[in-house]
Every structure is written in C-alpha cells, then in structure tokens.
Length: 191
Picture 1 (spheres, rainbow, N blue to C red):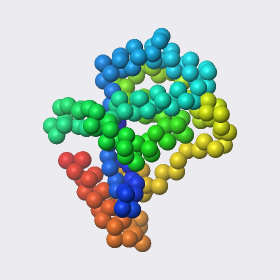
Picture 2: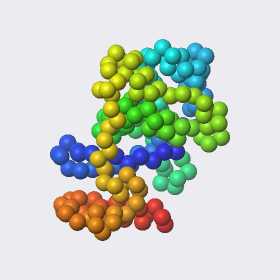
Picture 3: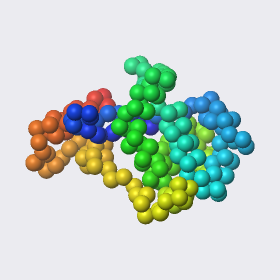
C-alpha cells in the first residue's frame, strides 16, 4: 500500500494537504494481467518497444484509478468504488500524480512497484517501465519539454518529518497552522 500526500491550492486559493491511499491486491493484479493480450507485463514490454506514449498514459490512468481507495476506520479493509475513483479523478491530486507518472519515469516505477503486494514483486522486478524519452517519443514531442514536476511541498512534508524550528521562521499564519497540523498528524501516526 502506498500513502501519498498532496499539497495544492483549492478552488478558493487556500493551501490544502490531503493524503490518498493506493493498493492492488492479487486478484486486481490478475485482472490487469488478463486485460491485455499476452498479459500485462508482455503488453507493457510491447508498448515500450513501440514507444506508444498514448497507450502508456492510458495504462497509467487505469492503474491509478484501479488502485485508489480509502482505508476503513478499523484498518481491516481497503475500500474502492466508483464514487472514490470519480472523486479522485476530479481532484487536483489526481492531476499531480498523473503528471508525475508521465514526466518522471523513476517515480512512476516506484509507484507501480509500491502497489504490488510484496509476494508478487519478485515476478515483475525485471519489467522496464517507460522512460521520459519513451513517453516523449510516443507522443511525438521533444524529450526536453517533458520534465519532472518540481515538488513544492515544504521539506518536512517531503521528508515525512516534523518541521524544524528554523523552518518555521518567516512563515505566514496559514503556513504555521499547516506546519503544526502536520506535526500533530505525525504524532498521531506514531501512537
């Protein structure tokens, strides 16, 4: 399971940080495997060889939407349904994740590998995922225009730690509140 935090501006221009969870179980991986002629891994290898960026992007979208869900309050179930998928698809975090996937091949690889249950990771470890060049070639654009998105989240969020005293100096009131909420969030996780 992957937990990703996204910080973005809401429709009113306020900074918002949200966490989303992503996972695929063995049955869902089997469905993805059966959805393509020759299996998902062979299909991925083929579109890599063909440098078909459009198909790569479509598959990334499918994988993202197949994996997004919510943890139950008792942490016994990972709930996925059309409402959760549609809510995520219509959010800024979806756009941020999708753009990260198509512009930053190492992050895309890390994300996809993180979705796979530990017992199945050995089976797909040798699959080469698309590079920035593969995607650019498939879309017919220059690779130099496909750049990784800059992560503008505060260092303590990117590094999943509490903010240091010197990092709090000069922050606005809203940013300070966000920093303290982040620290409280981390303290809640450690309990």
